[in-house]
Image 1 (cartoon, helix red, strand yellow):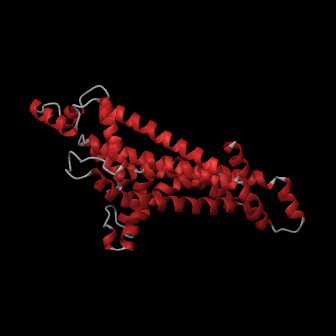
Image 2: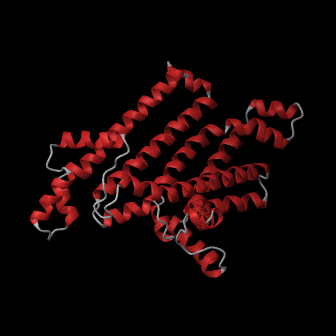
Image 3: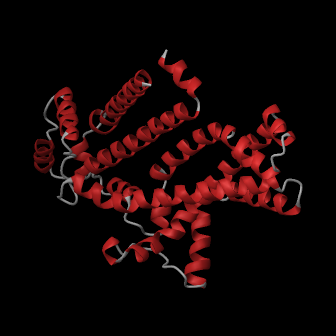
Amino acid sequence: MIGFLLGRAAALAATLALASVLIFICLDIAPGDPAAYMMGLNADPAAIAALRAELGLDAPPLQRYVGWIAGLARGDFGVSYTYRVPVADLLWERAQVSAPLAALAFILSAVLAFASALFVVAQRGTLAARLTLAGAQAAIAAPNFWLALLLALTFSAGLGWFSAGGFPGWRAGVWPALQALILPAVALAAPQAAILMRVLRAGLMEALNEDYVRTARAKGASPWRALTRHALPNALLPALSIMGLQASFLIAGAVVIETVFYLPGLGRLAMQAIAQRDLIVVRGVVMVLVFASVLIAFIVDLLYALADPRLRRARAS
């Protein structure tokens, strides 16, 4: 297990290093002058030169990259050109919206997927199961932004149960803050829950045809016990892969949802930074999102190893 952990940790570090190089190349040393881009096409040359000196762009690329990595290691992401505050403070403030939103959407997706998959398999062939499958197919086909607008029109403008947008902050109370995140979380979770449900359903249907499940039924196990106790654990491995990919998407792919509901999250911060030509903030946001995605992949690998010891032994060898 120690060899497996060290191997995965090394892969995580290598992925982050490669990602940092690509981000630096795309934003700092790609053709064009980042300072001129940030100041605008009609900016005064003296102002551009001053900004280049302030950002350290007059130093060699390798020195700038090493300085950036050294700053990241101690939590220094630089100072925002637009907001004139440390980028780390901006990231921490916006992460207090994006992280709970992604966590809430992930929990909703997992609960809906597992409950509906078990229901469809247990009630296979019935009208209710067919309707559930049809609803899942519709959820997969529905774009996130369209679903977000539909939820806002129905539950905010129509019924008035939730606010149409904005975030009151956690200081206003846990429930008001969560209430502002419920509709965005549902808009994010519904398509992902439908995808995960179909994967789980396929795994459960395949597991039910295995000899060990038929043996359990022959020994007197009820259909529900055979489904949950014997078939479900063996259908989890493909579901873990999907859940890992979905968790990364929920963290990094909520830009449109945060824009629709006017949430001050990381995705909206990235869009604002791009519009304002604040490449320092863009670089910080992208690096944080990459780190979150790689960390989730690392956790999924650990869960895989715990769920299937054969995989752990194979990778360690």
